[in-house]
Figure (cartoon, rainbow, N blue to C red):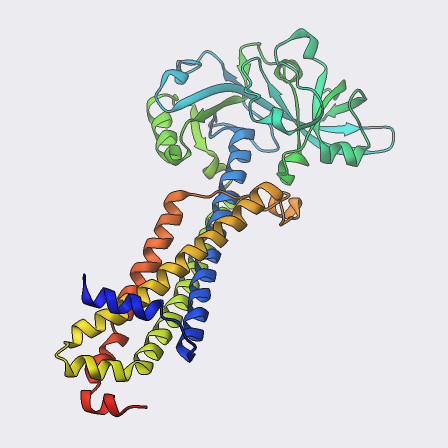
Length: 406
């Protein structure tokens, strides 16, 4: 058996009361708490990024294809549906779906209230897989269906402001020459939690927008493209722009269209890095202090081992193994605590949030096994490498003075 390993194990599991044992427990708890905080912080940040990104992409798609000549105030230049990429783009590896869309600004009026609104026209190819999960009342309709031409789906925010419910009729006025209006029936109410979208958008049949704008049935406001892997977003956007859209069209990713939101999400990564650095520093400082205390408390043992011919490196390894025991036990406790707290939040929603500010009502959790493994490996390696330096104290201890040390 390895002699250093044997002695370190005896030291680690020896019974009795000493000051070092109290310090060891404190250090073990500090490592456990540091690892738990890093795991929980990573799970929340990853959860935020996934949840909010999925909401944005689910609502608008990953890539938008529109006219270069698109003007402001939600006025769109019509684009022909007869494009070489529609719907052939769905056959391109990495592309999941493509659908047509159009938007038109209007004013929604009830007997006592008015509200600015942007109608988002959807066609028969609209993918409901995302939005149907956020329908809180009523039901969806199918674009292009003759029974849906006067239906509208509004947000919970709009319904609350105008005191509307499913089945109510509402007038929507359009500022154009000549001014027009439409009487629409509310078929459903949705709530995504993305307040800037919920306050502004309602869904109608795309045919109504085509008729209001005087467009041909083959003209739309643009196309929305959904891809399989969000990590390929920039690459797919550049590829579609270069290989598929013509000179009069442009493809933009949602990251380009809404940079502020994604910059805010990227800022969470910075917060996560700061937390990880601080927690690792706490763990390293605690383990360094513990190792120094253990060495000083075992000065007599060091003197005896040296007098028996033990080398400085052999004795240093004893204390490094001892510190490794403490670190590994702290990691095990930290993983149990961090993963346990993350799972508790995921399934019991302990931490509530203001949805209007954070876009979600509870702190979302995404436990990434690769991230957890990296945290454990990184903490163990950094602590071990850092502890090599204070272990040099062993070489400064004289055998004669050590055996006299009290």
